[in-house]
Length: 217
Image (cartoon, rainbow, N blue to C red; front, side):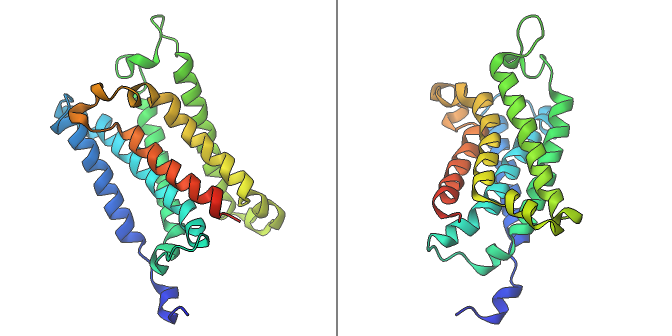
């Protein structure tokens, strides 16, 4: 039986802090310490990578902790109570990532995503499409709990359903897949043998997706 105090425990601050420090630290080590990126790239380009990784980890925790508990794993009450804050923080970090990426997205910064005539490659187009759709779905999901839509029980039932969430998660995965898979399959190009940020993010996604696939009701 849970102790009454468990209902008030919330580990959101600790989880968010550790996730952000790990994600930004990982990006710094991979691209600056053992990689070739100059430090003047950190305030925007490399920081953006760390922010995107943190967002993906937090969103995976938000969607995965409940199903993990349903699978019989003893998930701390503080973690379960943190899910709303993790989801909102993850969404805000996604928004920051979208804005920063919009300002960065050009042939000069992301040359591999552009053809010689300046148009997007097929993989880049699919990645951007997946990213945009995932952002819209995530925005709608969060908005539904902050507006009058939360009173529409049929809508809330649909947007929190197992089928909807499983398909929605795949949109975010497609953004990572089409953007980074060429680097994943070429370990010899990994800076210092450290996997790309996108591969770390997709690893968290696969883990969380399995939890949802098996444990979400």
